[in-house]
Length: 308
Image (cartoon, rainbow, N blue to C red; front, side):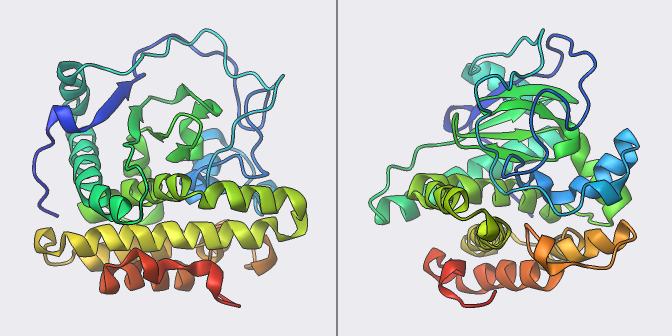
């Protein structure tokens, strides 16, 4: 995908890489619950990444993971000893974005997403407030609590932050078989889709519904994730002139590789639809393709279908 170089004045970036130390924090320990709606798309490859990076038994992790990371409750403190940078200046943002190629691509995608969604949101009478992109390495802090690379990328509605350890892109390619720049752009666009849901009030309504009826939590999570996939496709469709040969195939392959059923198979389990939180490979491809073909966010109403 041929995106313009970002304008430092048009994006909000924080950089927590190289900050304070974090000791002794492992998945599921005193910072953030692994399940119950606390992981972002972050759950995007949770099972495989945890198994590879931390040696966690993936069989014990299936069936969890939500779409938007919710704030931690009082008493669920994050990792101590962190030094979290505030919003960077334009110059600082440019420096953070140029740390490596993955950072640059992420900032370019963020800039394009801001420009694409601003008029769409304004047409819906929604204030197009920009999210911030927060880079961190291994461990960080979000407005929703602790962050760690094993979660994958995620969105925090409290501070409207997209949190990313760019090493995830390497894991996507080497461990999940999802390669190509557009596959990486799709990750940012999906998280931006969660930001759009937050601005539209969709995420809050879904979270409230999950609290009222825990039995429906997974099914509602799936619909939320699939809508974010569709919103990612809408962004790509609105920038169709920037797509290159093989981009759509790269994005659809990424959507396939991070489907719940595919991840469960990779973990040695028979797919269990009742435990899905992000949708099957077929569902994720379907809704990403729908956004790509329509370019219209109104086509992304995953909540209107009796079955997705």
